[in-house]
Length: 350
Image 1: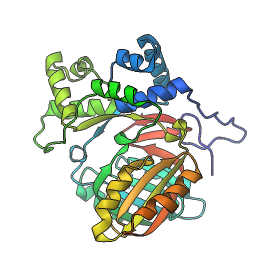
Image 2 (image 1 turned 60 degrees about the vertical axis):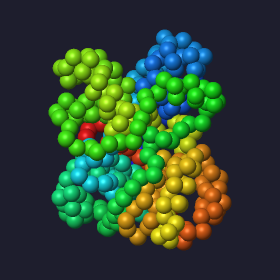
Image 3 (image 1 turned 180 degrees about the vertical axis):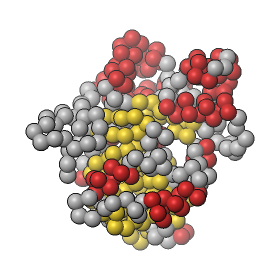
């Protein structure tokens, strides 16, 4: 597979130096773990929990951002993004064309995630179109016409039992987690996602790009008063319509092995299997789907032994599972609409 340049997706020219992968130290990892619990926590609260100073934590957070290793974004409820639910998509390509196909798919604004894989097919991606008519066009015309695509298989997401906002790096003790939860934004279950005005939708987009945006930031961005911006932001956060979360490559956190597992289960066991997998420490995204499989488990692991443990022991506790198929992720080009290169975050463009 061809290498990519530090700041884009083009293959490196012959003789070019390969970028050294970034490395996070223990203090970086502790900060990531704290932000995963309370993404919008004030620097003073993060510093107190981590036994540091607010200025030190602020500098470390700024450095991680400047080096394009970490961003706090806002994960938006699906109905605010589109008419329908996302889809899982596996693409088979002509020999030697996997990376080029993945590269072209990553340019489509309706593709939030795309990676080259080994296993069932050469490329795995998710599709989330704003309109159902656009989804049909992509599946029947646009994606099949990409040079190098031989075939594609699609599964419709019916329900997600866990999303990336729930995945945690387990480094903090119980007391630290409790302290962070006290300063985290309280969330209730999302209400009906209808009838929003322009200010609400603009605030959603602003928070999607910067999950730590303050009321002052929202006020400046929308041209409204700070008090109005505060009420608007708190309403979106507390109803769970925007869920701030840390965006960082799992490999930088010691989980370099990423897989997508398709599970086949008896109808009566589907919800039980999905709920149980959502609680598994590897789970980044677990969904019940309509297609040839029943549940899709997108997980990350420290090594092959961890994956073997899931496949040979953990799944054995679910008698309703009749079969599973594993796709191993080789190279992620895009995740939640944000391009990736050498473990670093590029621009988000939805």
